[in-house]
Length: 192
Image 1 (tube, one colour):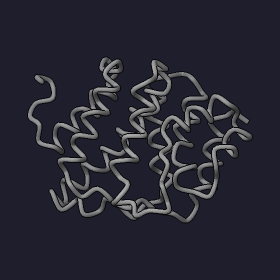
Image 2: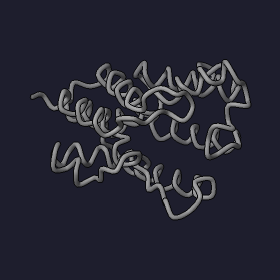
Image 3: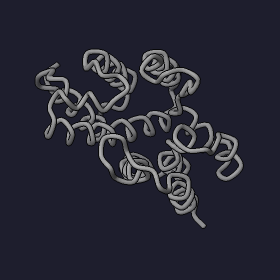
């Protein structure tokens, strides 16, 4: 079985019965969308599989060692590059900034293109959801998230764009930037 097919099956099993917090759709649709986005930027099957699996460790009972055992070191490394420590012993609202700083340190210190493909893919899939919510709810959308302050969210996503700037020639990066500029009302993303 191809590693991508295996990742799809594994992710579907891991996320079974869960839904996204912003829309009541199956959680697995988000990582599947990220995998499709990645397919437009890379032919690397490990990266595509990692995109499909990127939320398994964060959002299901599975741990990184399960990913390593099933998919190997490279896929586990890629998944880990996008996995945040949920700090489950403290309220999510209280740890949001700390968790995002830890996560950003992973992308700030890498030249690994495939890590960046994974990040662009995940963040673009997220921003597409954010945009749909923004069209329906406007600024009330932030009430769905652990970090309800749009200014703090904006700083985080602008830092993500900065860290991923080596990908700026990719259409997915440009789409991500357009959504961020639209949602946070930053003007024309093509003339910054």
